[in-house]
Structure formats: structure tokens, C-alpha cells
Image (tube, rainbow, N blue to C red; front, side, top):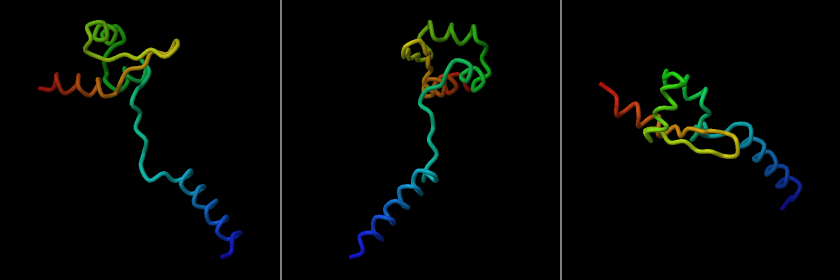
Length: 80
């Protein structure tokens, strides 16, 4: 077995998987400005919804993150 060839093939496979993922990665959380753009909801209204528990907020250090899942649930609940 040619170990150099095998090693080179493994290296090429790793490079390919790093540069061309099979699936797109979807975020599970977004920051406040992105949540506003995604939903079209104003900043004040978004904070009201967070305070009422209708949108999930995650604090990591000083970053405030909104779960995309909770934004999707909000849209489904209010769909007409």
C-alpha cells in the first residue's frame, strides 16, 4: 500500500469537505438587528414580545441572541 498516496487522498478529502459542505448551515440564534430584519417587527415590539415570553432570548456574556425557532413559532401563531 502506498502510504504517501493514501495520506494525500485523505488530505484532499478533508480540504474538499471544509470548502464545499454537503448542507448549508442554518443559524439557531440571531442577534436583535437580524431578528428585526427577519420578521419586520420593530425593535420596541420585539423587546415587548421577549418580555412577555413570546420570543426566546439567550444571553451569552453581553450578547443577546434570539432563537430562530421562537421567531418561526411567533409567525405561525400569528398567521392569518
